[in-house]
Structure formats: C-alpha cells, structure tokens
Length: 450
Image (cartoon, helix red, strand yellow):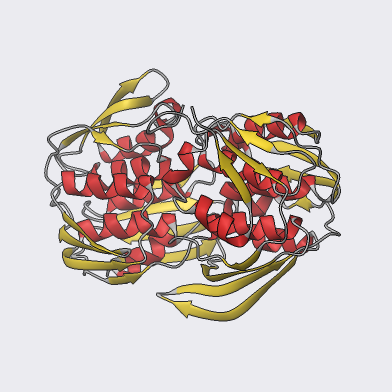
C-alpha cells in the first residue's frame, strides 16, 4: 500500500525510441538542506527550483513546526524566514517525516542541541528504519532519545540543555549521519569534528560555508576531517537548486536500453560525491556525454545527453564509489540486466537499510523477470541477458520504496513482456513528475484501477 493512500499498480512495456528533453526536478538533498539551513539563519532565504516532492514538503512543514515561516510562492519558488541558530520553538504536535530518512535524520540533528522536546514519526517504511545510527552520536552532545525497540520511530528527542562539542568518527559512510552531527554542532560552543574514512556527499559542508559558518575540510591519514565552529549567525541566502542527479538517473538509464533513444537532461548537478553512477555507466560503454559544463551556486552542473547503447558490458564497480551513487544501485542493476556479462557491486550494505532492503527487493524482482542475480550481506552480482533478451512479464513488489518502483518501470521499457509494480504511489515522494515526464519522452506506462 502506498505511503499516502491506496496502492497504485503500474505497468511498463516496451516502447519506441525515447527522445526529447527531460527536465527533472530539483535536487532532493539540496532541497532538504536549503529549508533546514534557511530556518536556522537570521532573515529571509529564497529558494528557486525546490523539489516539491512529498519528502521535501514534509521537511518544509517540520521547519514551520519549529517556528520558521516557510512560504510557497509557486513555480518552485519558496522563501524561509529563519529563527536563527538555537532559535527553534518546541513543536505542538508530532513531526511527521513521511517516507524520508534524510528528512528525519537531518531534522533530528538540527534540533538536538536546543532545549526543546520533539516527537518524530513517519510512514510504515520509515518507522521500520534504524535511527540509532543518528541518535547514538547525538547522545554525545547530551541529547536523549526514547523510541521503539531497535531504535525505531515513533521516537521522542529531548534536546541537550547544555550541549558539549564532540569529535565523532562516522562508522559507516553516511551523509545523513555526518550531516546530523554537523547540524547539531551549530548550536554548541566550541568545535565539533566529524571524521569519515570515505567521502560522502558534501552538500551540507558546502551549504554551511555558503550560509557563513566557519567550517574546514581536510584530508588526513585519519580520513576526511570536518571541523565546524559552533554558534555562528548564519546569513540568509538566495539558493538556486540544481536538478537532481538521482532523478536524472531514470531517464538516462532508460535511454541507454531503449533502441533509438536520444535524451537530453539539462542542468544536472555533478558534485563529485554524487556522480558515481554516470562514471560507472560510461565505464560500461554507455553513450553518455556532458555538455555545457558550468558552476552554479558552488556546485558543478552540466547537461547530460544519453543515447541508446546496445553494447553495454558488465563491470566490477569499485567499492570506494558506493558512497557517491548509493541511491542509484537499483537502476544500475536494471542497466546491468541489459548488459553482456556480470556487473559486480560490493561495499553496499547501506542498501539493506534504505526505504526497503534494496538488494533483496531488486534481486527478487530481477529474478522474477528472468535475470540471474546473486547476493550477499554487502554485495550483489547481476548477470546481464544482453540487449533484447530480458524476458519481463512479472509483477514486482515496490516495498513502499520510490526507487524500487521506478527502477522496475524502467526495466519494462525494453523487456520482451510488460513489467508491473504493485504500487507506484511512493514515486511521488521524490519524483512527482516521473510518469508524465517519461510518457512525454515516449514511454508506455499505465495505471490500473483498484
């Protein structure tokens, strides 16, 4: 069942060439952080191109609940009247973060060092995800957390009254955990230090610097050391949100597997901590080029052109690349199904604790559609059938996971028989225009009446 209503079964079938321009929505990671840092600044932050998916809208409502004034001016233009670092008010009700693991973990971080109490909840998927990975480091500041067994939502956080700075080594690569600790460190006197062995997406560090925080990043023998000086007065910003590379992955990957396709995806953020998928696809032999490369708002941006690539080859994806493409492994596995040979993905145990167990969900669905998959705790291997040889014909479970649903719909666009997903409703959480955008390019998608 969809997280926001009745299930929406959807079917995708083989189609003619996908052609045209795919204007995907704004970057979800940057959209979340724009709202949160705007709420923690003093004055009005304006945001252009905000992703208006359910996940981000839930974060906007959360910032309102903490006392910020958040206004939708239409057309992706928003403004946030911030309350300043340490200025959050105690919310009257439960903070409902819907399906968003990023939203809930970042919001927990930004309120954890204020002397207030907040209760967090979400949909069935989010309420089953582990929160200890965030609440454990937040406890070092003096924050208290009480939730269900296994550190699950619903959960109440009691903010630290007299927080102390921390030095925290992130145990597994996670931009969410790193960002939660840095956001908590904003309201702490002294320096908060976060150390990560592998670089993860760095939007939080870039945006903190842009808002005027004193933050340094240094590569050392110990790892990537991020040092934040607490209690700054953050300055409001004008933010132009680049388009989301994680959303761009779907029309790009569809174009690579559908014969005759030629799709341009303009204005995509190519932050090196996010662009691992595109590097991987090119190594597989994808006809994928960058055009009009430029910098916007401190982030590298380019237009991506993807063309049908009938001679894709399986490769071994370097484990060190996982952090830069963790959300893209499901749709990469779809491309791997149309390649020749094995695509090996290692160091991806984070996929086990996303909106769903994404390794298990993709392995089950791919096998049902005639693709050979092997998997282990932190790895999986897809043996490609090659262009034109993916059988399709199965119904796949989305497990309330937007990326699983979209990935299987991409699979169906070049399969021998249609591919069905039991519920496409969760797609709205991150890519609300996925269906009309893909249909405009030429995809054959349909919904079922229930």
